Length: 327
Image 1: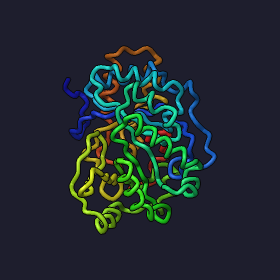
Image 2: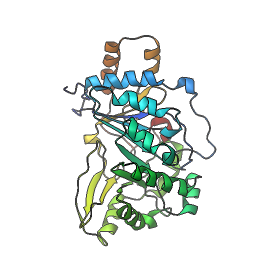
Image 3: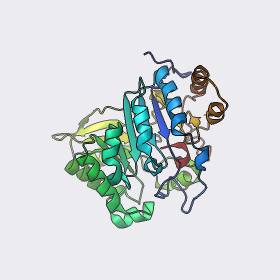
Image 4: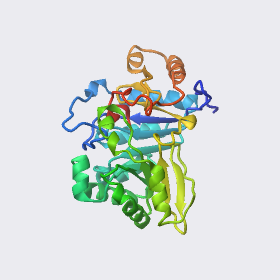
C-alpha cells in the first residue's frame, strides 16, 4: 500500500509515536516537575477501541511503524490487550515500546507475546544515588526489568541516555561498557527545552558532538546502521556488535528527514515536538465521524506539519511538558 501521508515539505509520515497515558511512576527533572499531579483524567484518554481505530486509519494511509510511549506506557492497565489489537491491524509492520523499565520485569514476556518486537528503555545513570536524584526512583528495578526483557528474547534493546552537563556526562564511557557487556544498543540524547522543566535544564545541555569526540579517543568508531524509524545517527564500535546512536535535536537537527507525528493520550495529534501545531481527534471520534472522514482529518493534520522546530530561536515556545506529548 502506497503512503498517502506526505507533508507540505515532501516528507512521508510512516511513523506514529502513540502515547497511551500521560502518567509516569518516575519524576525525571527534565520531563516532569517534582510533585506534578495535574494529569489527564482517564475518561479523557482515548479508549483502546478509539486508539485502534485511529491507528487503523494511519495504517490504511501508509503508516508502518508504531511506538507506544507515555508518560510510562506500562502504567496503563491491560496494555497487552491494546497491543494485540494493534498487532492485528493490516499495514502495521513494526510495534515497539518506550519505557522507563521500572515495571518491565512483570510485563516483558506478555509484551513479547502480544506483539511488541523492540524496546527502548530510558537509563541516564548507572549509579543508584544519582538515579534517585534524577528520577526519584530505584535503579535496581530498572536493571532487573532490562535483564528480564533480555531473557524474554527482546533484541535489540536500546538504552536511551539523556546526557547532561555536570549531572551524568562523566558516565558516558561507563554506559558504553555496560551496553557492551549486555549486548544492548546505546543512544545518547541531547536535552531539549520542552516545557518549563526542559528550559530549566538548559544549562545542562552538552553537544553530543563533543561526546562522540571523547569516545573516539577510547574506541574505534565506524559508520553504523540500525533498523527503525527514529532520528539517531549511528556508529559501531570496531570489533563488537555495539552500535551507538546520537540524537541531536539541538546541535544537528534532523528535521529534514522527520517522518513522524505524535498521538497524545487525549487524542491530540502533535506534528512536531518543538512546535504547537496540533489537531484534536477525540471530539471528532466521539461525534460519530466515519472512517473515511477520520482519514481525511489525519491528512489535514499532516498538512500542518512545520518544516522544522525552533528550539534554538524560540526556546520558550512550547509550554507543555514532555510527558503530555509522548516521548
